[in-house]
Structures are given as structure tokens and as C-alpha cells.
Image 1 (cartoon, rainbow, N blue to C red):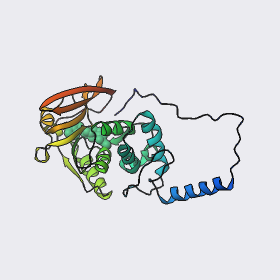
Image 2: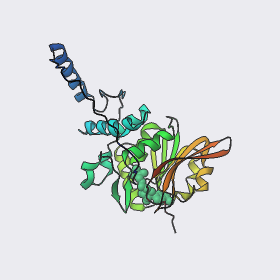
Image 3: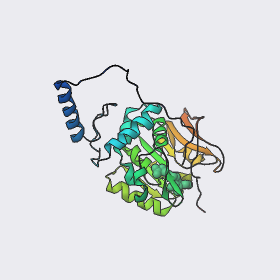
Image 4: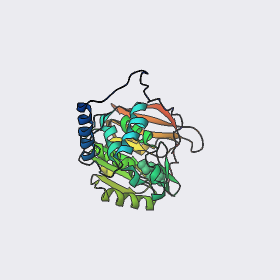
Length: 269
Ligand code: SAH
């Protein structure tokens, strides 16, 4: 998946010339304290953003890379939901991509995950997550498990995540990965997500991560009253847009949000 219409914002601040700053002892002491807290609270402390502290934060030495990703790719581009930012700070994205692309895991790009599929770039994952307004008591359906990364992000924020993947090997790998990482609130099912997951419906939110030519009617049916769905709609080889679908008092409204490029929504034969 690729999102091309992003312009990077400038984040560098220039300091005024002619001002020198000689740190006193209190500044050095504060810096030491800061370093100490940062080292012993991985993922929980940032000078830029107040994260709070998540028990699930992984101490894997890549906290700084994730912090940079969150600050530069997400917060600077307008993702404001603190919980969403914290979820992307917490989930170890490098464990969701093949070993040979791990050094790119926190870069501003989509990455291949095998079988011709891709994991979306972090901004798109955050954007789609923020737009469904995830609540801690929500039940969410994802169509297109892929690596399981988006499902893990949703699982950091909501009570239950149901995710469907049409390619058996990807479904199996994602299931193992999510289990090993302790995401007990995610259920993975292999199959064509066109028909949704009726037994677990209705859903507070639905996230579709493959581009469909039209919004599958069964997914609209399985959306709860007041629910939200985000789905890329358009031709596989032409323009696609992320669409927000809302159900209010039985009425369906749709809104075009962003031009995007996703892998195609497939159907089982
Ligand atoms: N959300 C994923 C990225 C998914 S890429 C992640 O975080 O890694 C889109 C995925 O949708 C692919 O893995 C593709 O196989 C899957 N897919 C396409 N059509 C589908 C369908 N009808 N039902 C379920 N999965 C589908």
C-alpha cells in the first residue's frame, strides 16, 4: 500500500544566533535524571509527547526509533489522538515485517510482507485507526490481516479485534505472531472478508485494508448503529480513496477522505 500525497512538514527549529548557553550543575543533574528515567521507562517517557505508561511497551532497544516515527510521521502530520500515538509507540512494528526489511520497519514507507502484499506505511495505519474513533469497550472487525500489525494497533486500543485474511499462509503467520506477542484479544480467521464475520457482529468499527471496487453490503449490515467503517474504494490500477462510512439512525453516509494506493480486495473463487 502506498500513500503518495503526503508532504513532510518542517520540524527543525532554528535557534537565535548570538546566544550561547553554558549549562549549570542543575541542568546537568536534570539531564542525568532525564536519561535515567528514559532508560528505565522504555516507551513511557518522551520529551515531546506525554505518553502515559503502557504495560505493553516493549523494551527492545527500538523505542527511540518508534518515538521518532510517531513524532515526525504522525504527530507532525496531524494525528492528535494520544491513545493512537501511544499504540503506535508501543507495537513493535519490526516484528511484523520480514527479517530482511527490518531496518526499514520505522521508515515512512509501506513494506512487502510476502505473497505480493504490503504492510501500510505508519501514517496510513494511524490515520485509519484515528478516524474510526476507537473506544476501549469497542469490538472491531478488520478485513485484510496481512502481517497483523494494524490488528495489533487496534488491539492496544479496543476490547476485541476480529480480523480476516484471505491468504492462508499470511493468516497462519499473523495468528502465531499475535499470539506470541500476547495479543489475546485478537481473533484471526482465514477466509474471504467480503461476507464479514456475522457471528461476532455488530461491530462498533470496521477497518478494511484492501481496495474494493465498492463497499461490500454485508459489511454495512454488520456495522453497529453509530458505527464507523474506513475502507479504500476504487480500481486496483487507478485512483482509490479512503472512504469513511457511518451508520446513523439506519442511514448510511459516506465521505471521501484521502487519495491512496492499496493492494486489491480479492474474492475467493
Ligand atoms: N492490515 C495489514 C496490511 C494488509 S495488506 C497489515 O497491517 O499488515 C491487505 C491484505 O488484505 C492482504 O494481506 C490481502 O491478502 C488481504 N485481502 C485481500 N482481499 C481480502 C478479502 N476479500 N478478505 C480478506 N483479506 C483480504
